[in-house]
Figure 1: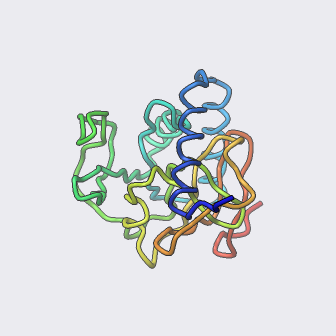
Figure 2: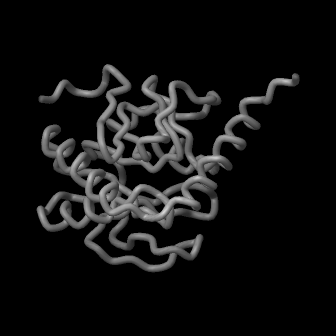
Amino acid sequence: MEQLSIVEQKKSLRKQIIQRRTETEFRVFEASGLAEQLIGLVSKLGSKKVACYLSQSTEPDTELFIDWALENHLSLVMPRSNADRSLTWVDFSGDTEPGIFVFPEPIGPETSLENVDLVIAPALAASPNGKRLGKGMGFYDRALGENYPLTVAVVFDEEVFTDLPTESHDQMIDAIVTPTQIIVCSSRFPKVK
């Protein structure tokens, strides 16, 4: 039997996960569980400036966390997608408008990841050895670059895999956050109680 290339393995895995997400109904307990995990993490880390994303359709829901962050005056930096597959970061205060993919994207003054304590990144899957599977367009891999802030991938519990196929351009993560747990993946992640 012929072995699939890494690109083909990633493509196949993405297809399976997207199909499962599409077939799964929204579960309120997962949204509230994820918010609890993120709030707890940000609180334990003492984060003052956090980069997060607006979840779309079948992604793990970040809305409750974002609402809490805004109510508690946490400085939020959010990404806007650009046609060249780069991200523009903006200071977020709650306003959105349709972006290049038509779904709502944050609007606000442009900023950078400088002084960001934590990046909360979307993912389709993640592994305890620090690998993250994105949607395949490389937005986050390019945005994080070499000296990126502490980064966590957000996935559903069933999307934590023992290992994932990766390529040289794939950025590693420091932890995984699911609706029920936080899994530390790297020594960069601070020891918190």
